[in-house]
Amino acid sequence: MFTIVEWIILLLASFIPPLIYAVWIRNTERCHRQTWGSILLCFLWGATIAVIAAIILHMILEISFAISFEEVTMGPLFAVVVIAPIAEEIAKPLGLRLKGVKKHITELEDGLIYGAVAGLGFSATENLLYGYSFLTEGFLYFILLIGLRSIGGCLLHASATALTGYGYGKTLLKHTSVLRIIPYFILAMIVHGLYNLTVSFELPGVITGLVLAFLFVIVSISLIRKKIMLLDARNC
Image (cartoon, rainbow, N blue to C red; front, top):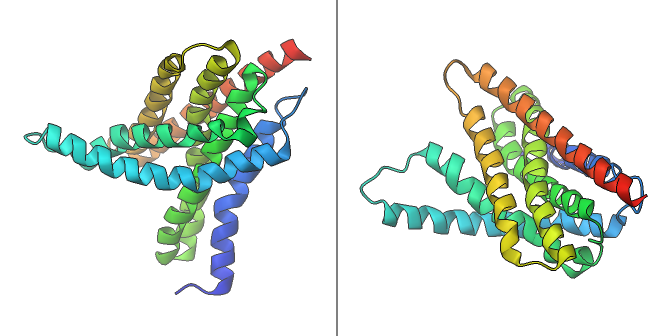
């Protein structure tokens, strides 16, 4: 069992980095910034309901794929690269449909912001679940791996879900069919899947895979923020 101090460290290490990123993303917009209440609501969706929904969807998809391709062995890599991105990228952006969030989507960049925040909420709880396992292996192991997740995992979830959020924002503001979201959702899954594939590299080495994955998410979040700034500048 963990001590009270260890539980506090686990909670802070899991939630503080995603919350800092959420503030960073929210403040990227200089004009008509989103309210803190709607940002927190979207973050909490990602950290709670989206996690539960993703777990249920993951189980359903895993069973469905196993039945559909019973003669093919579905290895762990398939679950990580295909099933997890589908389940998680469906669950996270649904938070943008909450009344307290949806009414604040009045500009195209808002979908990017709320999508990223929902992803960051999800990554906070994911950090907590993984961090619990890390901490059982030792404090130094925990510090190293939770630190890596605080960069790679957080920025991945923010970047991927921002894409679907952008698609949802466009359909909402332009009053087009909800099916128009699909290309953005597919792109989000691809981004998520590529990241998971990269961090799963065994050859030419784990370190190489991590470096490539980190570069990938840093570039992704930079492009997302640049898009927010460009759209925001048109509305100032």
